[in-house]
Amino acid sequence: MDLFELNSSTQASPLQPLAERMRPKTLDEFVGQEHLLGAGKLLRELTEAGALRSLILWGPPGSGKTTLAQILARSAGAVCVHFSAVTSGVKDLKKIIQEAEEFQRLGKRTVLFVDEIHHFNKSQQDNFLPHVERGTLILIGATTENPSFEVISPLLSRCQVLVLNPLTADDTGKIVDRALRDKQHGLGTWQLEIAAEAREFVIQHSQGDCRVALNALENAATLARKDRKNKIEVSHLQEALQRKPLQYDKAGDEHYNVISAFIKSLRGSDPDAALYWMMRMIEAGEDPLFIARRMIIFAAEDIGNADPQALQVAVAAKDAFHFVGLPEGKIPLAQAVTYLATAPKSNASYKAMLAATEDVQEHGALPVPLHLRNAPTPLMQKLGYGKSYKYAHNYPGHVVAQEHLPKELKDKKYYMPSDSGYESHIKEQLKNWEEKKKNPNNRDGS
Image (cartoon, rainbow, N blue to C red; front, side, top):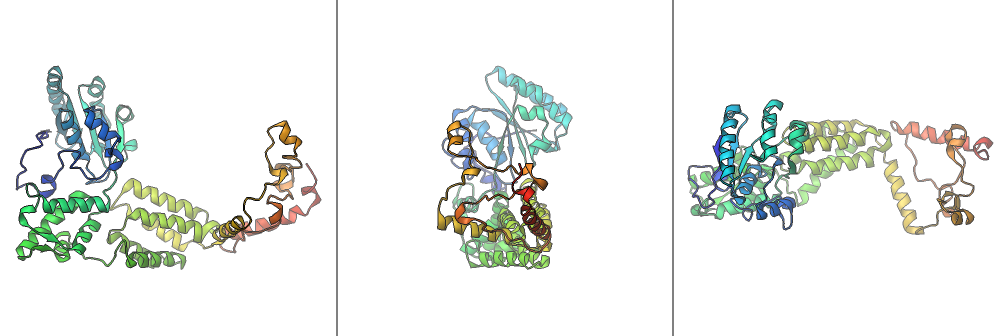
């Protein structure tokens, strides 16, 4: 159980890690989470108004959960107590409650910051409830896990869940630059520069975690000074992170080359190559959700109805990664890669879409045939809307001979199923339906 330091002017100890020394004290110093902290956004408004309430902050490591809790408490002039699932127990909570009640009588609020709240079991979480309800404590819980599954419902209903995103590359770059310039808390007195490729390297390999970025920067700076260099090079960061640099520029040719190789390996039904190119991208710092999006597109464009489940697998992999995060999130992505690579292939749906688009662009907004139009009013019925429409369920096999395209495109075929996978069944089914439509019972009955 620890009281957070609330004095924003306190000098950080040089013995503290750089990530701790550079921890923002105000929202103006905070980088990232614009969807919560931008002008007019919720946390910005709450902080400026000092209107503190119980919150669950859900986000990946290094996204600023602890820092935001401190800033929110400081802005409201509240006492902030850190409660740990590992070191704190019911006895500690009772002591916190007693002190919070004393503070409350003095007109001061108490924020109980519970880091990694998902580590607390149900009975432990139950202990917070009455004190949150009475307003003795303002609970701010932080978690890297989905609170829907990890936080008990009564507690969730008394807290607002806010989702924090991984820091963007621009955010991480700003944090790195500030740490190099800051003479009071950062490395500014060392008067070091950082090579452009080294800056990109630390941004890519920190993967949106500012703590990883600052720890790596501090170690690399120490190595540069040991080498009597005034510039941090890729070699210093490589040693600090124990990672080799990969040739991969997320904004340049290599980015497009590698993603092209990945897609073409999937299309070529080569799971080994597809896995290799995926890991090349991830290890080089590519956003895994970018890869997941490309797989979703691929599933519809290159597999389509040859295996309708492929799209479900790709979407599920995206959702699984979003839920799990790195590093374990690579596992469902890898499963999706091997599934897509080994699935039967067909681009018939994609080609049908292009052909239909071409006719739309060429012919414009062709009128809807009268028999297909909706007729909710007597006037519309009088005008012939819906007249002679044949209800498919009234015909044998639920199939009816009826034109559904504008007359200018009569009998046009866009979708031509292949003989691959499930699509061969669709092809046979469409053929059978065409035969049934020739039957008089499927033409004139009702």
